[in-house]
Length: 215
Image (cartoon, helix red, strand yellow):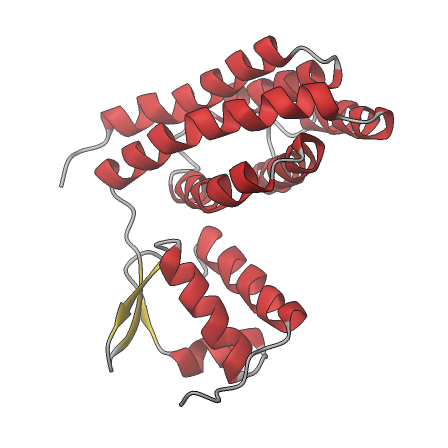
């Protein structure tokens, strides 16, 4: 098996993004057992790129691989989410600090535009989640720190999946306001204020996680 084919980066990345979206939006719900063949059919892509995507998602703890029995979508639980948020907080601080200092003028304009769009997302969860992803991508580009970006990416995916799972119970308006404020502060080069807004945003999830039943 030493000469196994490797998927082209574009196909492997496409498979990863498609499956990640299905996990985050609960089309692949927590605890569901699936086969590699089902995921190939679901994505419409070949075995090699899907297999590479599965391996990557398993490394991110989105799938649990069961030898010879397929895969299980990782359940959502209180202890894991608490650890995810604990790890995510300092990484977001690094990214926002660098983004506020390094963003170019056109990027600052884009940040301001997303902040304005967020003000209209209070009643639309899907719009909010899309803008949240766009904002994270723009922060990452502005920061210029690929190591922090790579480390925080799976933590954000877990957080979005958690949001989706508890979408009817987590206060959306507070999170929308925190996102909008964070974007405006980075655009203004106020990294201290942006970091505080990021802490406030993660604090919303931390408080909710603290109210979840154990086990």
